[in-house]
Length: 225
Image (cartoon, rainbow, N blue to C red):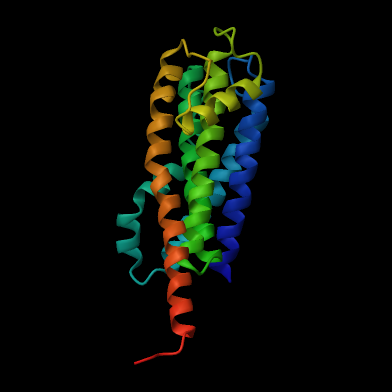
């Protein structure tokens, strides 16, 4: 129960973090530094992630082995942005975005861990992992695209344009919005690659459902000589 409670708490923290980052980029994009409330929110979320990590380690059969194999999860759970603010380290806006992106990656892991514990069937878990990956990837890419493209790209008038651009590129259809920044061009290449890599996962899920249905129907039929 404690393990599931911390997993669900980490999931809630992930949603709150994504919402805070969205508000910070969409409504406070003109600011050169993140607001203090976002710094506090990210620090609290990171503390929840650290708690979730150590609870998982305590429930592992070999805690030290778990720590060594999953040290990267703890690395992604450290509140780098809050530490930089507390230590009065002057960071560029790009560096702050990178630190926030590290925490967003940890939120994706928290979502996966929660799905793994809440969903027992492997095929259903695969579907939800696919949906979560596609939705989060396109949304975070849209946030980054809007953050860097909107000030210099006249085709990006609002966040809806960035979100549409992200979805169209993830589905490999393409959009009529052409990036002009280095980050935008990089995302324009990575999103179709991610879309092509993730589509077979959905195909495997549909195939698994079909095979399971065929086996069930075959088992119900009477055997004949």
